[in-house]
Structures are given as structure tokens and as C-alpha cells.
Image (cartoon, rainbow, N blue to C red):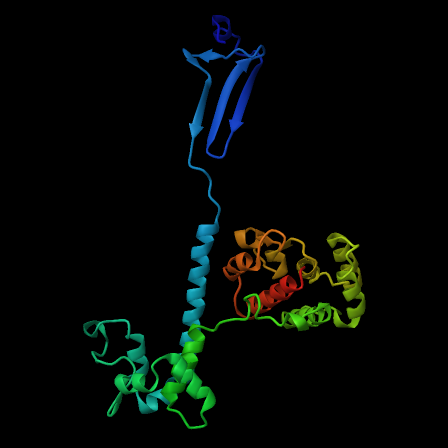
Length: 310
């Protein structure tokens, strides 16, 4: 209720501001100490502001993941071409150029040739595809045959592997009969050694296995007990702690796990847990942040942890 008295209140009088904050709107109102709506300049002091609902970074992260995956693929292709260039040029100086221009129509190519791969006398793309209908026929021949292949065929086979390297991350591809706690501990130590973090996992395998398989111990207590055994140094303490969190099924922070230096980025603050997300949901986020060997080791550890129910 609004009265003339409420409009004539002393400017120094007490008043209340009420807020109603939603995901896509914010409501507000100003009242006196008796909860009468205050008026100023002929208007009631209340209102609402509507705005677009906040969105997660999932879509933006998806574009970033795709962009970085494409960049890694381009780097791999460039390095492969550099390795083979000298030998291929000896027999066919235009082979790599034809491959690079294969997506263009003839008029847009640097060298306007009809064929995209082979242009030899007596062996063109026609003969090649008759011999190897798909790239997988070529790859099978390269693996099984003892004959000496044209260097260009070898390049095409390896290039296909670089384009579609595949992985063993899908559930069911991991030999779960041979990935118990002991194997997991051995693998974890190997992985951490590769990224230059040395901790005595295998030498304490029996104790660690007993801790990990003891259902009476909480995840947090398992983490504390394992850290007391490992006693990581100051430089690696954060990273080791995050590895143990993954191992025991707790939420781990990616930035500390891979020892990122920039602590203000969204990637550093990204955290994950198998209790909240599946492996398929976690991996795309991680792929958008790290690559190379570090990504392979982290992915492998996550696969083993999930397969063992941690």
C-alpha cells in the first residue's frame, strides 16, 4: 500500500530494498520501515528487469575442442609430409601438391591436373582405386604383404592413420580382466614418471591395494592415507594429490593435475569426477585443454579408473 506520507518521507529515513533474483529476471522494490511502498517523483519504486538466461560454456568449449583437434591434425600432417618429401620428390615431384589441392576443382588447382594422387604413365588414380578400392584395402596390403611398396603408397597408408588414429577408450576395448588395482598402480606410476613426477607407487603396491579395495574407508580417508605413504615433494604435491583424487573417485582439478601455470583460465578451474560425469563427457573437455603425450596418459588413467569402478 502506498500513501502520501510514504512519498513525503524524510530522505534520511530508514528504508528497505527487496530483491527477487532469478535466472532470467531480477525484481526489486523499496519500502519504508512499515513496509509501505515508497514513491519518488510520482512513481512507485518497484520494477523488474528481464534478461536472457545464462548459458554454460559447453557450446563454446565444443568449438574450442574441435579447433584444437583440427590444429593438432594439421601439425601431424605437416610433419609427416616433411619426413616423406625428399623420397617422394625423387619419383614424383607433384604428388604432395596434388594431394593438398585434391579438394579443389581443376580450375582452382595450382597445377591443373585431372588426377588427385597418381599421374604416372600407366598408373593413375583409376588403376590405384581398382587395386585398392578403399584406404583400408591399402593398409591391409601394407601390413600383410612382404613386397616392396611404392613410397607414395606407404605415405598414403600412414597418412590415413594420422587422420584417423583411433583409440582404445571405448568401454569394452580395455582388458578389464587384467586391469585390477595392482595393474592400475603399476600403470599410474609409469604415467607419472613420463611426466616427470616420481613417487613410490609400486614399492608400496600391497599397502595401496589394500587401501583402495577397503570398502570401509571413505574416499577422503583413502586419499589422506595414500598421500601419507607417497609423501610427494613440494613441487609435485598438488599434481600427485589430484592423481590420487581421480584414483579414489573424488573430484579433481585439471589445472593442478597437469600443473598449469595460468591459474585464471577457465581450463585451470575445470574439475571433474566420475560420480558426476561419465568418461565420454569428461574427455572432450580435457581434449580442449591438453594434447600430445600428456593427453594420452591422462585419458588412459581415466579409462582404467572408470573400468575399476573408482
